[in-house]
Length: 321
Image (cartoon, rainbow, N blue to C red):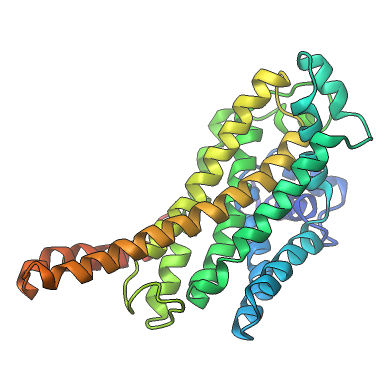
């Protein structure tokens, strides 16, 4: 693959995943549909653009609900409603009675039913409720998680297009028809640095903690949050793939779009839970150590382990390159 083809594929990925006026030509589309590695790369770019909205909102000290609204509006403004339409169609297909053929008929119906409406409400509400947790994080960590969740959502899509077989002729066949599972490792490797983003942010911003989350200089919570974001998003994509195989007979464009939206919500909530658990674990250790009469030398092995974890984000971030 030459540089020109790779750049065309990246433009096609951005055009497919967002409303940005790039990658809408046939050359970019043809290059993109055979290059799933572009999905996580585009995720970094789109996540960074979302972070440019969330970051200033957090710096300005806006209320949590306002930050959440800004995040949801930024997602809609940047990515449009094409993927949300997949959520609506899949919601209707999920509640209808019948076999795969009947469910695929519902996917093509232009009328949104109760299942689709409920699906959209749950996704939007889930995203907004997750965003309410961002003001309680260190600024840099919150921004890092926004990017990590977007990369995780694109990894879920990469899993769907490389592991899934098209359920019928159409968009799904155009994207997934020529790909195989052998194409998945490259997107996974390219998405791996996103695990390190919250950890690198925490390491680079000692003391930037709000809400009593973590003492300065402790990075493992950031690593845990980033790992949870990517891992849970990928699991969400695999779960959707399993469901689509059983209920639809394969994947489709609606499955890809819904996978992106669902994985983003799952990644956001999973990363917040992981951060909270790691934060409380650290506070418990700090609280119990003096009561147990542990001296500084007794905690030296733990300190060495934490120090090693603090360097892990940088190692992970540079590994693919």
